[in-house]
Length: 152
Image 1 (cartoon, rainbow, N blue to C red):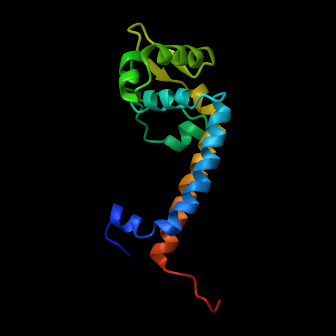
Image 2: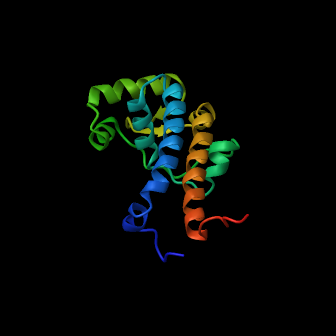
Image 3: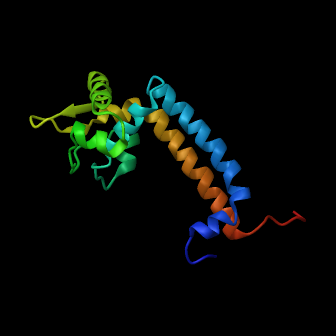
């Protein structure tokens, strides 16, 4: 078992890992594209906005409707535009769209934060993310455990 999974370790096994990644990633992007009405930039905006959210219980928040309160570093439109490279006006429109869906809220200082409604409405994407992580994790575990017994 490797002490660390380094880039070199992954690259030396890319012929095995990449096909698994490609299929799982395509499935994930397809679900996200559907959930965001074809606008993957909007998905990137929400992801960037949510990076400030800290939770001890992500499973509860994303899948079980647990209390949505969490310390959050709120984010403004300009910082999201800078972080994503998406023009500020485009970010503003995407934020307004997500606000109209109830996925984000803005405070009195024009700072944005995700809502529990976003987790609820985007649950299919969360589950496909779980599938993506599972596929990659299973490939790594299989590599670490060694090849299957050819005689089995």
